[in-house]
Length: 404
Image (cartoon, rainbow, N blue to C red; front, side, top):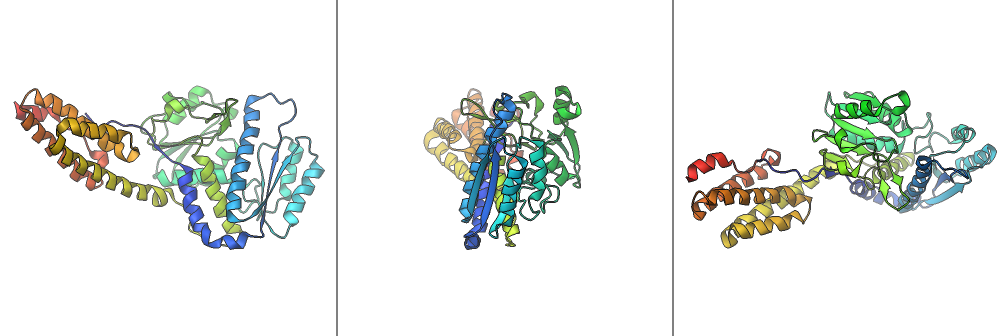
């Protein structure tokens, strides 16, 4: 019996933005008199399309997050919420005013934008102030969301991996493809807009090693789309519901399937904010080290987990002697409730106890306990060498023969 898998590892953007804020901290005084303008639109009167309404609601949440992020820098944030009936001349005047402000360091226009004639005015944003990459001539190749996603993908991908991008024709999905098109991955572009059926999307996702989904269609990706072999699944959607809950493209029933997953909420959103902070630094010509998930988050986390595993095993070994296997099992069950770092070792300990119960029926309790403790010690040695993924629970067939 192999060690059970409890859940996918979650990638929380709060961990990433914390690192970036620490790197920005020495430079905050520069931003005291700087201005960032954020423009969002109210939904058109009478709009009933639930998916579009969700996008407008998501824009409000995103704007609030951006205001909070930029205020950390000490910037002034000019938040402008415009009526859907705003004329193109009014919109142009607002953009020009922001662009001509001597303290301006960034201009963001939130999607969705209600009219095509308004979209044509986006070119008035100077390329150096277009920090969210909404225009083709921006100094940034794609949106901050697309960059956040592409960097996470790059941290997990290997040469020859297949990446499925669901919503490949959208603003975020197309940006991810643009940023990764020169990588040594095969990109599978999936979008209903180019005629892909749900069956084709499902198959494309299952054929991939990594998955990005950015459609804004709640629960599009069901559990049977995903597999444990998926290294990383990124959900870029943020879909507010009338009851106050937030959904993503991925059904929450599928959350425990892939190896790593960005949850909604809490995954891509804060990671996007981390990218925007880095972009503001670039506009200000301040150099900071870019975040990297493996070096900034995963490696320190593994070091902490190794220490936790070592502690739990040492604790187990001591209590096996003091309290017997029943007491050790109780410790293991308690460990299951104490965080991700303990869950793998806790399952091992429970497996050891299950093995012990089988052995004790065929041998003396003392002999069975010696066998299980020897197994635990061997696994502890392997865990401390960083090979936890190779660990298996006790091989009962061989030990049963010894104990008879």
